[in-house]
Image 1 (cartoon, rainbow, N blue to C red):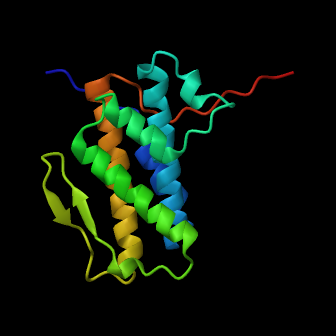
Image 2: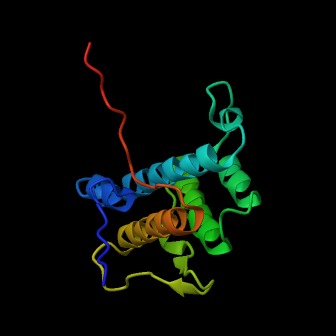
Length: 166
């Protein structure tokens, strides 16, 4: 029997856990999750779009929402992932544009790979909204990484640019 080992040192899901370890407020958790999801979406565009520079180039201002719609319309993103990523984006927009936004009144669900929507609101948590955002971002990033690796055959790892000596 062959054993499969996966190097998780550059795993985006792990990167999310590390980044939110010290920053525990709702806005930081959501922004960090959103940024890492966008990183993965950009990787999909780089690999699947014929001319990715038209979307990711410096002269183009494609918003996160437009990039998400593009990837979804290309047929490379399943419905459950689109719904979860869209949920993160909606919450990020609400938190970023309304300082008095009441997260408690929001839909606290998550879409599983089979399409079933489940409530993941942690009632017994000390900070349930913050815990929900962590779970939503963590689970969505994990789903997206697995989809990229096993379905799209795209390396989802977080690879920082190497610095050259001068």
